[in-house]
Picture 1 (cartoon, rainbow, N blue to C red):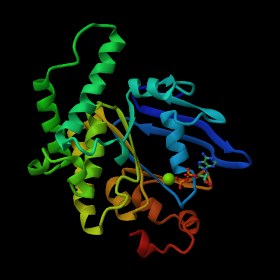
Picture 2 (picture 1 turned 90 degrees about the horizontal axis):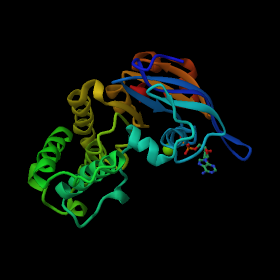
Picture 3 (picture 1 turned 135 degrees about the vertical axis):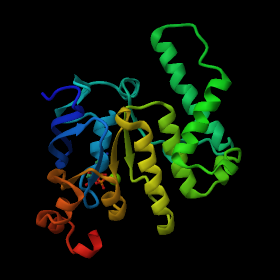
Length: 264
Ligand SMILES: Nc1ncnc2c1ncn2[C@@H]1O[C@H](COP(=O)(O)OP(=O)(O)O)[C@@H](O)[C@H]1O
Ligand SMILES: [Mg+2]
């Protein structure tokens, strides 16, 4: 087992079968604390299933998951959240008629509430003022338009809603944040600012936050990642820097018909 400080997350022989189908096949992966790692792979290669195993949404068929050196393989989703693992909220978790600000504040407050309960204390879950500053800080980091902070979340542009999902996840103070196709549904011209937003998040939190991103848009993956992990039919077929992955023959074959230009 690797040292706790170096790796925030490790999987060992992680496997998930759905009947006869092996969706995740014997994946052993170490994630360095404070890194940004991306998982790529063709449709159906097991990326979302891998995330579901990490968050505890699905139990593995075999293998182990360690978070900060602790075996969390049998932990519930709730226990994992409490330990510091979070995935970005989905659009469906946003309260559409609440403002952007209020959505982040509620996420932040939910987190403190849980912590207060956990400690068994009778303290109220933080004052409005305390959260006010925290919400504004997070909104600035993810780059939410200040002019739209007090507009109902349903009415802000789609790309801002995706940022709001990340902001809400950050408000719960995760140490490991999983983003599953965070740019889904975005227009091409919205992508550069979205990449900047994620890089700003990373820079602001430093080693306090590790990001694991599933993404199929190659420009995002190549710009964002320190290391890329490639899944194909549930197996980890490659791991390396963006440059190494772009030059990897096996990866190009897995993305049948995908050429260098398309990966660039
Ligand atoms: N709950 C499930 N029940 C049965 N099969 C599933 C389930 N979830 C995913 N699969 C199958 O597992 C494989 C991997 O799926 P998924 O992890 O969603 O891939 P990806 O996210 O890489 O597109 C696919 O063949 C998919 O059909
Ligand atoms: Mg998926």
